[in-house]
Image 1 (cartoon, rainbow, N blue to C red):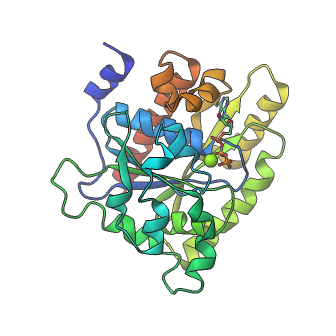
Image 2 (cartoon, rainbow, N blue to C red):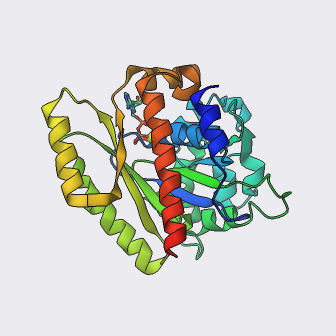
Length: 284
Ligand SMILES: Nc1ncnc2c1ncn2[C@@H]1O[C@H](COP(=O)(O)OP(=O)(O)OP(=O)(O)O)[C@@H](O)[C@H]1O
Ligand SMILES: [Mg+2]
């Protein structure tokens, strides 16, 4: 029995039927591990029994490519959804991972902000599209988690993601300027909370590309844990070459090499995310 099977047997989903938990992977800094975390946390959650939809909200489309979705199969994309020309369900395609689906993106998304102009509901396009998603599906085939992969910017796309989400999950690269960008991100979350989405919370901060041999990496971990306390997940994602190789094969690292340290870390992160969900639910 594989690690995945064992965990699957122990796990039953704890989200409310018909209401997926919606988490946005956000950080305006580029290259910190948002997409890698969306793909691999999504895969790990699916592997342990959750039904997961990744929404690619980045015009770069890295989550779509990293999951092996050919550009020719993106006839209907998140752009069509946000512009109001298609329901989200039409943009969804299956991936090679059971229980993991994705709504792919295309470069068109980069023009969305201009095209939506001052439309009154422009910040709520994604929220409304996700709201319709689990309607009219048979019980047991609805999503339990929606993970939104944001672009490296605090633009209208990221604001749509924050307005649609229950919580944000912040990948933070273990490097010198990590904390600097974090304050600005937290301010934006505060703004969204006070204007667009009072329920938005911070699910957690995941430290990525950790290298234990690097003193700077260790110092950043200590600083972030001091500043953000229990918001920081115990699990750290190590710098691991298998993680960076996997997307070029159109595969999550858990499929590419289940036994590598990166895969193990993402499985632990998924367990931690689910545990936090349980704690939140019992606290209410
Ligand atoms: N733990 C890791 N170990 C090694 N390489 C990693 C790791 N995490 C991410 N990478 C690599 O770092 C690069 C940036 O990662 P990723 O694309 O996930 O970041 P991002 O925050 O989504 O970037 P962007 O802001 O451009 O959307 C990619 O080449 C990815 O393969
Ligand atoms: Mg990305």
